[in-house]
Image (cartoon, rainbow, N blue to C red; front, top):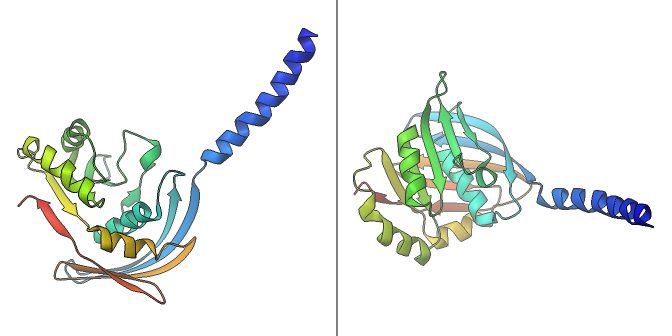
Length: 201
């Protein structure tokens, strides 16, 4: 009887665990991204593979795409992001493995920001959550003033909502950057993202 129960439990467990693992797997999005960045004289097309974590929203994913476009470089990559605490959303490393650029999204804790500034030459945080981002910033800003390699940029909620409407499993996007302004478009819609620099002021 005990052996039968053990065998039944093992079978049910083996069926249950893979179902959880599958449920937590990232959804893969593909994007062809054409970039015309007149501010940096950068004109390239990137084929992006975006692993979207189950807890990630369309809004957050498209902010990642926007951040990639704004800092595009042959060495810039999406990290494991939400599934790994020790990595940012995007980063760029030099040939020795040193981190040249660390890009985080949202409202990271002060400890994480300080650790990032100690590891990377440049750290950029994009906030995008409206009032909650403002509250976070007002609370934390005074503790970050001495971090000279930190930049904090805000994307307003209406721009983020408009970006989210561009999200598809297969995307063909064009990004134009000129005089600090940035536009992201697909075949039918064009979104201007208004960026505000919180820090340095």
